[in-house]
Length: 305
Image (tube, rainbow, N blue to C red):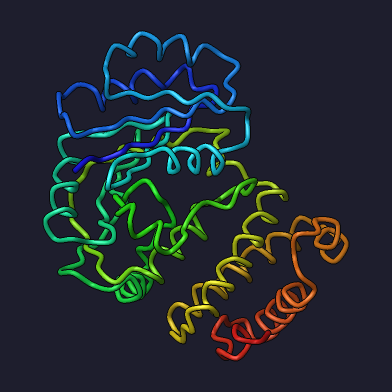
């Protein structure tokens, strides 16, 4: 058995060494470390070259295609039975990741969720404890009820077989690609476990995708919700808590667009990524949510074709 750790690289010369050292400072043999150079133009690759004597490292060079593209390339060449994602400006506690790796193997899980902390605040990422092996929908609903759900791929280890059998991959060209990826994993997984193992350190920094707010990002989130709806309907889900989560994603992002004084109709049509039916659905949800100041809209809205 082997664990493949996929790390996309793009202009991270300030951070990549700390990330790599955190993984390489133990001699675990069952690791495959895949560094996907997504067209970096700084000194990231010069720094990486210092560590290439470690045979666990594989480097893939590609033209810049974004985070989703780099992760998909890593998934395609990974030889491990299990997959983890680490962002190149973060770092991990490798011994704790290996603890999670041992659990997912021994208990034959589709995926396992761990914990971590934000840097520099040291605030815990996951606030609550979840006991036992559950379906993805069960743990998804429980996290939503406790207001503890975070759409991030890096706090998990995944069975590669599970990802392949369900054709789960990242939507290329999309910002906030974690949102539809994690949704699809949770909807389709039959065996998930949460372990309160603090292995991931997430660096909060200005200018990153997660801290930058602009109109383009909002459109990308809405397009991600389009994929969420497809998965929702394909799997015939009818869960009030998950319905509310999806509708909140719709409403909150449409509201932000309105606050930015954008011409919503024109911009959505220019984007050319939304179907007319989905566009009408966006507007319907927006109008109803604004009128009633509530997101608890009937399930039928989500299931209209």
